[in-house]
Image 1 (cartoon, rainbow, N blue to C red):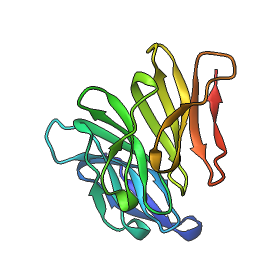
Image 2 (image 1 turned 90 degrees about the vertical axis):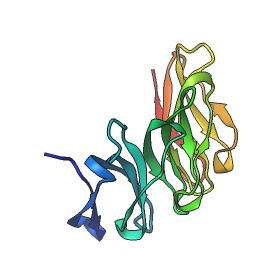
Image 3 (image 1 turned 90 degrees about the horizontal axis):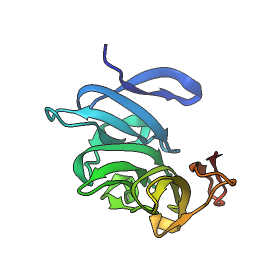
Image 4 (image 1 turned 60 degrees about the vertical axis):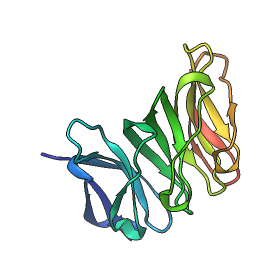
Length: 179
């Protein structure tokens, strides 16, 4: 059968099917304090890949966030103003993105010199974290941006070649892992 994203009422009571963007599967990956849900879903476009989505408060309605010019996008995090982060196929490469409030617009965050980046977390000031290929193209490093996704700073590693940031709080503390 198909896989569908869901939301519950407070304290995990009940389960409501969020549906899809028109085709097969959907997956919820993040939620904010008003109950806006983000994730990705198959679309009604034949041959097209999944697209990032956002819902309204309490999981009502599912809106396609589009892509950066390719066929695929994924949403992984949302803050309380509804800024969404994830990654999308672009015209030349796959890049992390951030949207404006309530999922409006999609801004390409670029990369740390490589051809791929992915955003997984965002705090209420719009600082974004994730992982990006470095200029060598061989290694991925954790990154953090400034407010509203501006600028990308390499967080380095714990001495190895690989790191990834998975979350950020409103104080700017970043968590993740490093090999």
